[in-house]
Length: 472
Ligand code: NAP
Image (cartoon, rainbow, N blue to C red; front, side):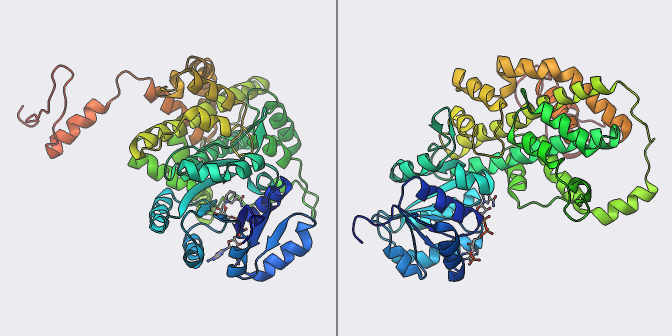
């Protein structure tokens, strides 16, 4: 292919691939596209491409031939087997020096495996986390690449132009070695689960507890989104309450089934946190609550027989709203803290070389968890790159502490009303556990030694000890 070949090829013209291809072309790059089902490529070319420099390959060979050498291709297909199927198909057409990028939500262990396999033929592989959904892909996502520096350098102009921009800087940077990009994206999604659960709990308290209707809820979340809580998720939450159902004219939110699905990235984060022994309770409970939401038939049956004291909120509504707002902010700090603590441990375990300031920086724009709070998080890691935990940052630690009484009050009200708020509760318990100089794990050690002779450690001497517990 002559030098004017396409700078980047996109395999997969689903929601994300289509929009990324348009985004790349809008920034002046020559793009080649290919989709397993050629009809989708035809539709895309006919309906969306217009005068942009996007060239279709209806056959794989034709597509490969459109690319400038050494080639750079972005695979944007469903995560899992589909990525392996595409790699298998393109493998015979690739040459040493080519670069394959997987932009889907792949599990990081798959990314490591694929990188090793392609390295045999000296083909570079990069795992790229992409966040921002359809609109992000089209107009500026947050991009989380991981892999070798030469791979990043090859496509940096394309990625940096296409990414969201915050204060003139693109929300993309090479995050680290190997599968670092997909790992960071996984944790991003885990944090997303946690934040969504916290917001859903505040909604439940306002709706079930205070009896608020969608229009009122719209005002509350719009107000909350103005200041320190300002974030993409609160912004869309406020908008959701305004939407009317076209058929009935009723608020759409009230017609949506209370059963949340998941694609697995939140669960992966929790598994990983357990594996690396880093506590992420707010994220874990967010996964659990989606699971519980799925047991709708059982919940409906249980609701007939299992009752709570049926307390009605009788306090000061305006004061409670303030407390809830502060409690949510504290919960958000705890959720980011858990995700970043996991990233810190993962970076050491997998030798990723992550810089957490950079991670916080590229999450400030384009992605689902973008929030004003990320400015403070970024500053925390900029001032102390070796910071062990966000609670130990003077600013964020004191922000949590000044809101802790409100969070305690909110959790108390939720328990009193019988409205489940486990994300808020666990965010508080996580804080209390983290700040406890002494936890009751001494008793757990004693129990383990009692029934299993697992030994215990002492406060006054090093080594492993065992007691004959039944002697006295
Ligand atoms: P999508 O709209 O469902 O499109 C799926 C694409 O994968 C289609 O082009 C499909 O081709 C292709 N495909 C499926 N199985 C294949 C196979 N065995 N061989 C070849 N191609 C195959 O998916 P999407 O939403 O764009 O998501 C793509 C990736 O981005 C996923 O990993 C997803 O998790 C991730 N992601 C999605 C979002 C989002 O908001 N949607 C956000 C961030 C990341 P056909 O047309 O031939 O079926």
